[in-house]
Image (cartoon, rainbow, N blue to C red; front, side):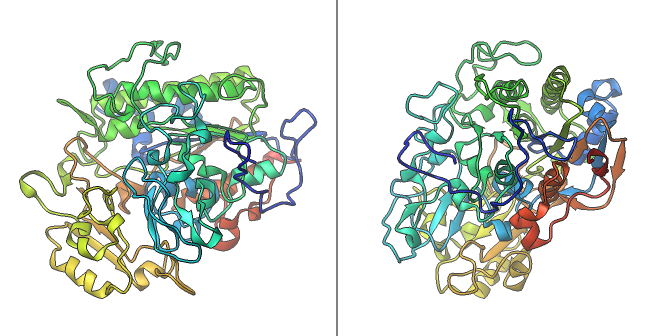
Length: 574
């Protein structure tokens, strides 16, 4: 089970899917009835399917027209490329990640955003670092609260190690989560709700561990230990805080051999790694090195261990390359064809070179043939066409947001009218939870009266929400986490009002959701699949490749999620 440094607090119970046949050999290696012994799962956050097409085949006016992701292109020569893959909706990192590893949608997961709302929970004991106010909790009383599962629950979000007591400067992990900053559950005596408890389903990490496998993951927040899933287990979790202050990282070398012991972009805003096209590469390389250690049969920090049965990480560099405006330098795209700016081009090259290091390491370790490599993304980014970007509210009071229009109808912790709060759940989508006994129809009419000001694209409420999620509310047959209203704006409209960004994600648009999905192994031939698939199909595919029954996943049993089509996995079995 996963525990914090506080040995008296047991955080995870045994896996709910107990009974999966053990496939662990005496030396700890996966010993199932499949030639696939390892799964390397990679999320290149923000990377669209068209980004992979352009970098693997080349595009005019970039790199002299030559391909600029040769390592990804090489994987595709022995891989199945799903060009119509879609992320979760909403397309935020939190539901996007959990969608990939669970096989479930937000409806079953109960995960809508890293900052969302739950009508059945109570506020944290202590105000989070980002402003979810601490409050009272009485067993059996259900006031509702904004829920935060990002950097704000760290002990100290300014530190790369999250403020974990006694931790090295890059390595806090789960021990850096401040339990007093977690929402509390009045139905469980006001116990804090840890990230893996907040998720309603199990994941591949729990199923594989229960079957005797060794599990590892690296990500951008300690909160993303949620990948363990309900009742799950991570043997090795690494999570340097991405929104911490930038520091020097001696001995951490980029693929270009630049030593991050000297901050590459010291003139940038050093309050977060995401504020610089260059500094983000040093941050991502921490996790790249963790994977290199794990390929060699070590923990992320170099201690003796096993080669994980399942392991992987997220890259943040491409997402930063897409979104960031740093001074006079812009990231993003030049046109609707997805031609990258020079800044984005460099981030894609960095990620590709890092993946090349892993492929070499897998080959040197003699496990490349027995490893299934899956490249995908938690979310895309919108709009690709830079001419469509419209920040609300923008310059000269351009437009407003749905939450601002309804601010007096929202709980205090969700309302823009609260000057000290974390703010509403809005990026290029708006998720709206109303105060109890508020007329949803009346709120919708108010939004429609302000359609131009909010850049209204589509409103979902009532049956159009319940069809793909659950009926919102608190009580029998109702889901306390489902938003009352979901607003998707016109393409290009974002509700952050930021003048430092070019794109956002979270919405339902094609640019938000159509991401790279490549499944590769040397035994495969190159194949392109044009049929629409979902990134939630990755989870049952992983279990199927390892010789485990996908039905061990709650998402498969409850939502009918199937493995990805057109994969010849049978050749690995005997």
